[in-house]
Length: 502
Ligand SMILES: [Zn+2]
Image 1 (cartoon, protein in one colour):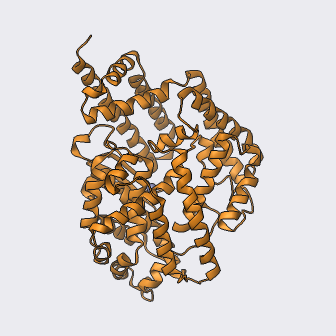
Image 2 (image 1 turned 90 degrees about the horizontal axis):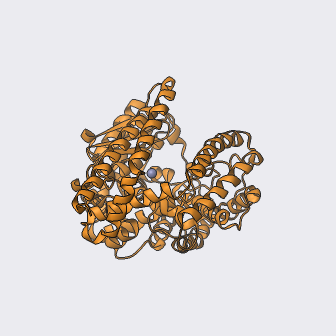
């Protein structure tokens, strides 16, 4: 047998090259999203195609197959980092190889067609035209689940692609408690009929000054702009290509300054995570967030738990007033706080407030589960959708464009992705609860001082990168697994005060 150390070395070399390839692909995507000429789209997608082909060849070949076999059989002989790297790579390798090439290609063709059909179907509010495509997408997902193998519910496989170790069993407990506590809370708020004036939010705020405020906020939160870049894109996103090179975007609207402000806080949370992985992980695939849910917890904790808190606004509003004296002269902290935290059931997920957002996710989770286990038929989707929106949010979509057709995810086969948004908020609340046992959050936030807060997250969450998986990470930090109690407690306390509920 060949020397075991040679196998490890070869494996690590390939792993590192794959990371470089993904760096190059990311740069193309960053460029395309932040101002590259549209006319170059064909050349860019040609380049992306070549790079992803190279990545496939580098990962899926005889040498890698035999190296992974050797390494998987000797996991005990590896140090922690190599062990996790090998297991992650094996998971990725299986995902790519257990599905026959022919099926995989047909599926990719279906997806590209189905997302085009979805776009028109959404514009025309025409579910019927999308129906046969969605049916086929789900058939493929079921077939792939058989090829790939799974434990328990087939949906476990798909949620596991985004949230390692998460199961339907765990999610059901999570969403049951959410349903039980958030639906009645929303009802109480709606019955209160409290009027919150939000007129000032749509006054004119110069974009270049908004940009200045965004940069100051990022720095204050603990993001190092010297090792990163803030630009503008249609949809804000964060891209960490290296610990020393983390990019993020926001989007400025002259008549909606709160939008850019809080999406900067949100992306800033993602970006701070990407900037603070342990140096020893640099250049490996472990220098990344450990899951979608944990990544989202870092964005939401800064956006909602910190930057939208009354304590922080007490500090921040005077700063904003010094930049926008005319626009904000008549606005008090209480008014500002209430306006940006106003609850209003709405049809569109991406426009939802913090409270109703999780209900939008719950609707999608219940439907995805039903579609995968066969208890919901594609043909009944618009009806099922509208019933759930009515039951949870108390409103009825007037058409499918603003109902079942609003999200792109299903047309692209992205099942199991939605729940991670709600998990992010719940992890955030759980982390904030435990953080508050060690740090006086009120006192820090009311001085705009994020030093202790960001350091806590650096040490407890960020440093581990993808080395520690989500269930283990949350247990390591808080002594327990995901517990929806903290999220529900947080929402109840926040909105009881804001809406003066009994
Ligand atoms: Zn996010």
